Length: 171
Image 1 (cartoon, rainbow, N blue to C red):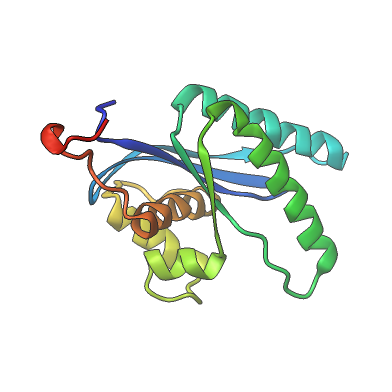
Image 2 (cartoon, rainbow, N blue to C red):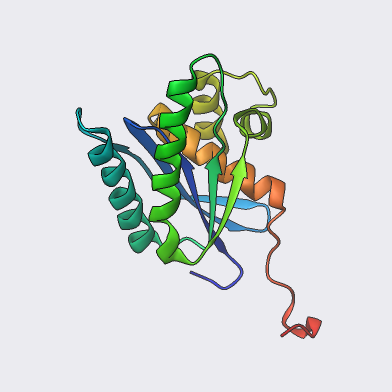
């Protein structure tokens, strides 16, 4: 990977399905690298958290992201669901520690606004915009699209610049 590129891993945490998406960002250019979903087995919640942790560890080892964007937990009506989501999110974040990468958090509305232009966009709209923005041939799974959307949001919100010119005098 060229030195002017930044590899971003987006994560959409969930206790049953955790989406991931990897992009290479160079200035305003976004290049799709990979995406998918970590699916956990039914049953023991602690075992599912371990699966998320190990799955994210494997992704980090394979793709070596420099920055990580993860969706922030929001509490709607079901506090128990929010707590489980928070634990899944924590397992995913712990799985990124070997990357020694910065972790950036974005609210779901922020991510949807950045990708679709509406904070109230539904999953189908996010999937369609991700397919179009990244010029993908096929639609990606909803959880993977949400993770790619987090990565796109990060790239746009952080304004990841291309490397400065070599003669800019920076070390």
